[in-house]
Length: 317
Ligand code: ACO
Image (cartoon, rainbow, N blue to C red; front, side, top):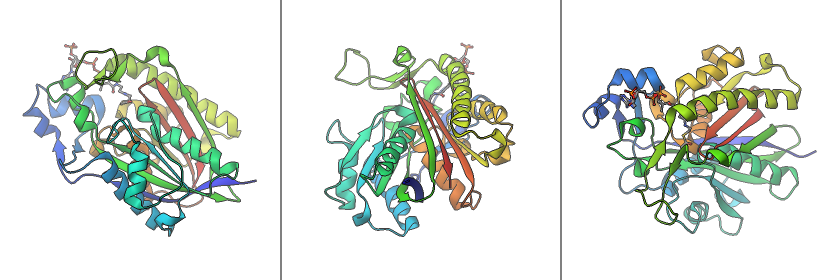
């Protein structure tokens, strides 16, 4: 049997930090409201010269270093993003150029906040069936560029950044299973228009936050059950929950479902805000680099986002 395992992780956050107090000067909000409703204190905001692909490159190079590999070793590049540098080519192709890793397949996955889990799932299939040996999977987002900075209901939520993993073929799991889903019935609950489609509105994030919130909690509950049942394991066997970092209240609900104390949850939402597809690989990288997550431990990754899309991965790190 061939499995895929995580050989290295990397992350990149822009230097500039926007605090809740900064936001108080911009819109009618308060540090207290943001903290109580979301758990977010600050978020990183990219500079004008940065793009999704520059941030992806920084995260990818760090993941390659951690894996002890070079750009020449990669035979597949997948980027989860809702904020590509250009409509085409894919950000993955631009990243491939930045890394000079020419020749291997490179493509983006559009699944909003679940983009990284979708990418991980695809790469895992390619490695399991022997087509790829070492895949670079990235989640990278320039959300500050599609946020309406006058809309207090969304501008306080999002941040920029990129996270990456190198998956490589292994005789042992690795990725035990991935589970991905979508329900397009709810595509209007959370979206960003563009100048191509039928919506004649500015290209900003629009969200019916409360509607999304309720579906997210229930759906993540279900995917935890699905993942545990598929692997025939008990929730007590999970060492770390690495959730999509959208809202501390949603994360707390999932931890409760797993009977996991919050000390066993990798939390970055307070410092990163919601970085969409970048949030899970950034949290994973944070957990690894702070020495919390150790080799051999069992991780449950889960995400929920626009689409609606959702997914999970059970990983033996
Ligand atoms: N500051 C102060 N007040 C605010 C702010 C703000 N920044 N934003 C909204 N409010 C007000 C509203 O106007 C409303 O006031 P009203 O009661 O007078 O009308 C009140 O606060 C409550 O608003 P709600 O939207 O009901 O607040 P809620 O408790 O639902 O929190 C939030 C909003 C944080 C957005 C929450 O609903 C949420 O996290 N939703 C899920 C987000 C998510 O998971 N998205 C998926 C991933 S994102 C992706 O895929 C790109």
